[in-house]
Image (cartoon, rainbow, N blue to C red):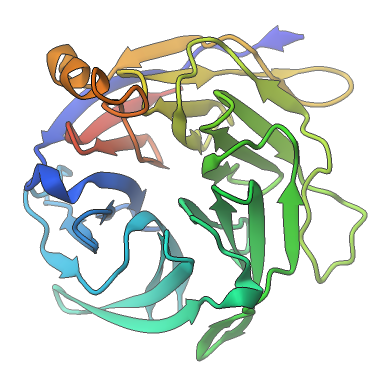
Length: 321
């Protein structure tokens, strides 16, 4: 097996947190890459940041979505009216909004919610649309140790099934805190906060065409000792490299895919380890809680990578593959 060249990231912008008590936990780029959405868990809101003409992002959000209940992650998808925004809330609700534009103004409307006992949502810390068609929403359930897949039933109006069409469960997924799909939709990775590991699953091909399914066994389980309370995870768009944030350590880790004659795998040791914040600020928080202080949310769009946390706010990097 031959590893690919390692990925590299270079910091190009830092946006300080407006209020450290809001807790930046999850982050996502819009499909066009010109908006950043940030879930502020203690602030019970999602903040929207716009991109300037020079490519940098504004230091202050231009819009605040209030009325949420401990939002922990966000995900974007295209729709006829503009953008869909899904927000995972620990209360067991996925709120779905439409973001439409009128000139330079962004109009935000709540259009649907996935919720209720049939949804089986339980501490849903991560959310993502499932590529390549974004016809499913997937959410990790921290307490249940599952990934739930909800099928879209209508584009106009926007509707999703209330019960999961498929649930992925595996013994390696202990308190999964984040998830990510490769751009092609063939690979699903989970950040297992409770096991200090990452599990990677392959999409099943011999399933009814109306359903999506992954597993049942992972193709790779990464359990490197440098994974400390992994929180969120992202695939790079070109090379399917994995970049993992660690809530209990002041760095992100990058893992390379390797090609073999049988199937794709990922190396068990990182080829990237990058510090993301001031070490003294990290230690001050981590001393009181070994699962806190490090980077939290992560998102990738093109050659841009964004990472957020309560301590650093938002870091934006140039991604080089």
